Image (cartoon, rainbow, N blue to C red; front, side):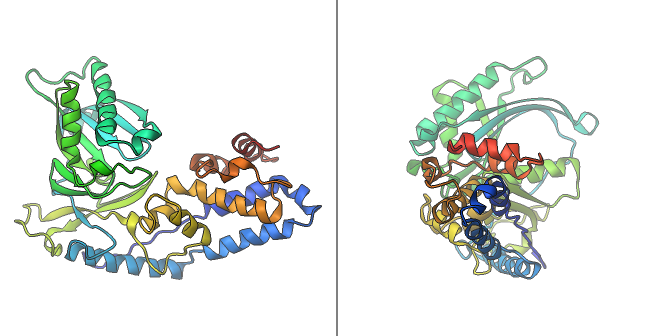
Length: 386
């Protein structure tokens, strides 16, 4: 792996948003003498969540140690450092019709694309995005994959002009599955565990390609899964398609992860023949990274304790989109309880986990209007406060 420096500068969006929201009500709080307490809560949060350069270097060094350990043996590190079986990335010469399914959070996407090689690149593409009903995220494996296969079949049925496969050729699908998987081959892999709010016990340990294939067969969809990849690896492949110098990719979305191109001979746990390319893409699964150097606040610890997977995915819970909104909620809840931030009573909706979504927090954070109308309106609408 050589000398690798990994740094993650985490912006305290939650603290910034809380500070902006405080501006909306400070005139009321100043008169009650509670303003100082509200600001003290924010100050404490800012200090405990601080990431100065020195702290980031400690985090980077700790992550590098875990990377080496994860490459050396299975289970030897908090980072899975999964072998992807992807030893060649796109060159830009690829041609033909390709389908893709991207499952990695509360939504999934289906895509078809016509590639025209270096001259045509992406000639044509169409996609659709589908929300997954919450009950399917904790239900049965068959129910989830039947829902996905049904949406995929509907998308195929709407295939437009110029997207039909060559005569006699079966449609092929690239399956981006953004959860920890132990890859068995380029087109198969067993689920290690769910993350990002999913918790379907009968899928764990199963080949997710086989699960999807059976669901497609049940509805008569004639399509073959040609490749199984993590979304981070898909992002890396997409970057390499247009720039041959790309060697790493990072996801910061519902969850977080990273993948990079490793030298095959630097992977002690690899026991097969070395690939001809001499390279292997590694799926780090860094969402599970944990170190004493990470600036965990009381809010982070409380969120983790009340989550579906306590003690796991700590790094992901600190920086990814699924959780930042709830960190904000927890800070606001304490301000409401200890500093009468919303008046004499705590808004009942503020007690509901994940009532504040990260996209809403981002919109508030970027509110540049003089009277902060976006902040005021969103808080009133979501929390039903005056």
